[in-house]
Every structure is written in structure tokens, then in C-alpha cells.
Image (cartoon, rainbow, N blue to C red; front, side, top):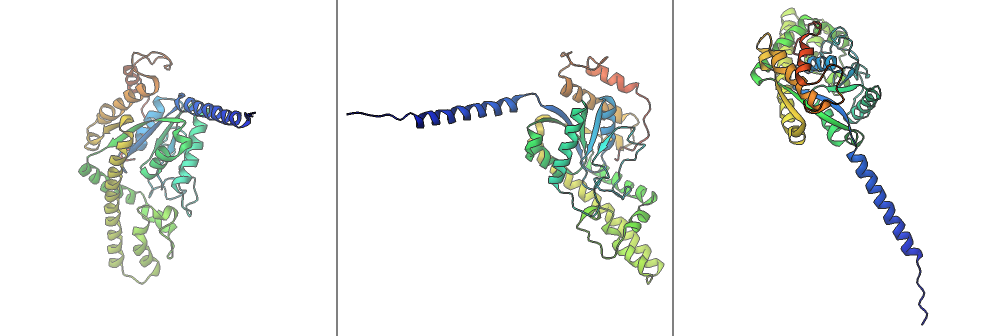
Length: 333
């Protein structure tokens, strides 16, 4: 009996198997190659994230900041959204800050795409990307769920934390400062009686709360006492809503800690808000610089690939101590 054996099927299957093995090897090599490093600064509203981001950027030049606050991405309402001023930036480049049309919704997916493009461009210029902002939903989407970011970047998370009673008191005082700085006038210029407070920048705390007051003011039918009461009620609501937001953000950070705990470092800034004159440097900045020195360059005994003159964490701290005096910025940013 003649038995014919066809080899075409087995060769084809063998080729497919080899191709699959090569693909798996390629993916494994990609996943294990050295990732570029990103610093992520998180914390509740008003804990000092922006100040820390700028301080870090000045000590690890060249560095650039990518804003991850979902209201600060929009153009306008700089007082209400507590945007850092041009002077306070001290020449540090910022991305996604005041660039988006205030009348559209900038989604988490939008943030992931634009933030990744910004980070790519910073890395291409041999810079250190620093993501800073309080919108944890943006960060969760980017770091935990966006493949283009996850496959290419390794993160160090710096959590700026303040005890809740101290933070609430500071947030209330910040609202008073914003009112003194002209927030009511700013929102008045943005006011529309039929505004949709579910879209764009109008979702920001400090906008919808003024609606009843501004509508009464525009109508011209309410007496001064009524308008004064409406204004005081709006300010009180803003304070309550800020504290509620801070509580939610802290709860979200605790949940995210389960994903990031190996690379997350808590920095207690409570003493800063209690007025200790050296607390920022001693309790926040110095610890931050040591953490980032080890993250970026390896342990102190690893002397390779360090910037000129920097051979240990102590040298980083010494460099911070002799830096030129910064522009005054409250830790509440």
C-alpha cells in the first residue's frame, strides 16, 4: 500500500508556531526593556502639589510639568481654578494648563492622549516629565489603563498629604483669598443665566455656586440684603464643596495606593500648614529629593549616570539649600 504524506500543512503550522514564538519574544523584550521615568505628584486639592512640582523641576533640570487637574486644563477662570501664574512657574514649562476650550468636556481619554504626547515630547528633549494635579480619575486612566503609557513609562508617585482638619481650615482660608483676589468679578464676566453647569469649565467648584447670586444681581429686582445673603450662601457652599472634594480625593488616593504602593511615597505636609518656617524644606522637599535621587539614579552607592557634582542624596539636599530664593508661592497650590 502506498502511503502518501503531505508536509504542507505541518510546515505551515510550524511556521505559524515559530512566528508566534518570535512575537512573544518580541513582546517580552519590549516589556522588559528600560522604561523612561516619570514623576507623578498627587494629593488632595490645596496640599501643595504645584509648589512641589516646580521645586522638583528646578532641581532635576531639564524638567517640564504636565497638568492633571481637570479644571485647570481649560482656558479662563484663572482665580476660580487656582491656576499657577506665569511668575510662579519660574520658567518651568507647563503642558495642558489653560489650553482647552472651556465649553467642551475634556474626557479622561482626551487627557491620556494629550498627556502621553506631551510626555513623549519631553522625553525626546531629554527632560524629566512631572505630572501634577488632583484629578485622580485622569491619573487612574493614564497609569493603570492606557497601554501607550504603561508599556513605556515607569512612575514614582509622590503623595502630598495634610491632616484633614488642618486641610479643611486651609481650604476655607483659600476661598476667602480667592474672593479677595476678584473671583466674584471673574465669574460674573463668565456668567450666563442659561448656562449648562454639566459641561466644561462651568463644572468647576466656584462657578455654579454663584448662579443664584448673579441671576439676582442681573435681574435688578432684588434688594441689597437679599443679594448679600445670596453671596454669603454661595461662598459657604464653595467652602463646603471644596472640603467634600478633598475628602473624596483622599479616599480615591487610598484606593489607588493598592495599585501603586511599591512606588508611592507619602509626604506629610501638615507642619507646613501649621506655620512651621522650615517645614517645607525639612519635611517635604528634602525627603522628595532623596526619593527622586534614588528613583532616577539608583541607590547612593551607584555613582553612574549622575549629573555633574551630584554623587549622593546629600548632595541633592545641599544643592537645594543654596538655590536662589524662589518666587513666593503658598503651599496651598
